[in-house]
Length: 406
Image (cartoon, rainbow, N blue to C red; front, side, top):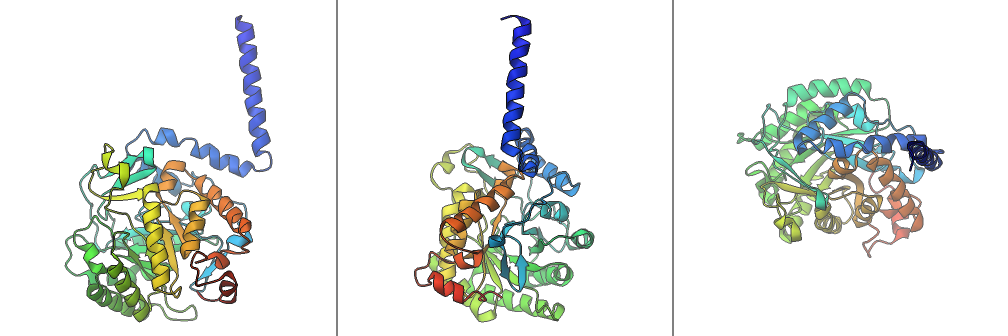
């Protein structure tokens, strides 16, 4: 083939590709923007996991991620704690630990963003390397260990973020304790007192596997003591026309039935506003244990966590009798996954690992598929679908109890 013919063939092929792209995106150029940015993901993953994470935070903080301008479908709107979320898809704690990129992340189309975990005093976390990709499984193992800039720095960041928040997205703040602290009540109380006024809801994280002794706080006696004290602190700072600041507890997926029963009893007795189900797992299911990074110490997140975390979510909805809003997190990478969390009992859904693998386009893709799942099963709203997999609660009853969570 002559050089001229080769050039002509390349030109025709390129023109065809451009025409094909235009045909796909001609009615949705915003999606082209999301997909184009996400296509850079393989380049970012040439860096080690923690460095890539840092680049992601930097890019979001500088407004380099796509900004969603399309309206969310009305079917995705949900009200929890008297607050309206334009969609139930949130970014889980762990991505933006210090609240550096709140507005950039909300602008991507999340219904809410949860920052943290934040500790009272700055601490570096565990030695590096401490984050490992298991890309064949869409998973990550991390042992960050609550690396945090501390309450004072994060407070500065959130004051700045609040001044820039103009959309409908909400902000959650996830709190941790310092590794060397023997005063869990004091540590969480500091976080509530200093950061609570800047948050739409606040979380006490007692389920990270990377801080020694932290998960022991999930036992009934310790949990009841901790939650009662933190609720007292919460009540002292947030009263008024909007009511008390919602206080949530984040639990682990590696709990036996007795532990789940105890947590449900404490949550119902003390009036906890919500439970986040769940954190990462210390288990290594199936082929994960044979992966080159499978035996790394730390918490496993991503697709392998989906079934386990959803089973715990289902059980907690049943144990709390649907009286406490649940946030489903663990292995969500599609709209179908989010829908199954909601049917199991979640009012809201969070993701993290899927963002690191799929990039910003995962957000609109999940919302679109979630709306399709609702429509296919005859649900007019998220509220109607919450807990639909529990045979004791019919769809008609869910409609009658549409004010259950607010």
